[in-house]
Length: 159
Image 1 (cartoon, helix red, strand yellow):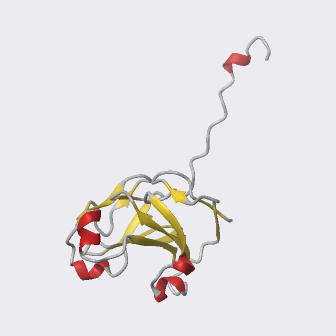
Image 2 (tube, one colour; image 1 turned 30 degrees about the vertical axis):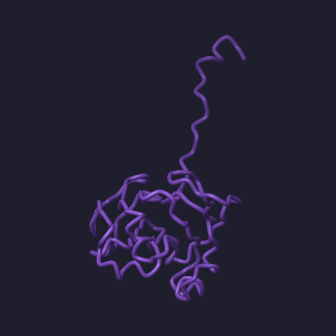
């Protein structure tokens, strides 16, 4: 380190392109107990079995879909992603979902999309397994983790 080495800026840490939208156990999408997701008809991805009721935007983008029932969200910014909270939760008609965004909103990575009352969802007999799929066909490598933490990097997108 030279005389003026202290003037050098520390290297910037690159923000992850995609972070986990939720906290919980990671499940491969092909093991989700819903044929539509498991067969990857809607796209490849992964699922998180929620242990925390806050679901956030995994990247900056536009909310392309925000179902009135609060159970599913589409996001887009080059990358297209569908976040489906729980399985068969559309049947709850919005009960247990406190929606924080609407279709057309611009969101920032980490912004809360919805707060979910986990006890209410499970009390209604619904699964908390929440698929996250890439409807744009994005290629990715899931990091080798068994547990996702919302806001932390969970995968690497392949260019």
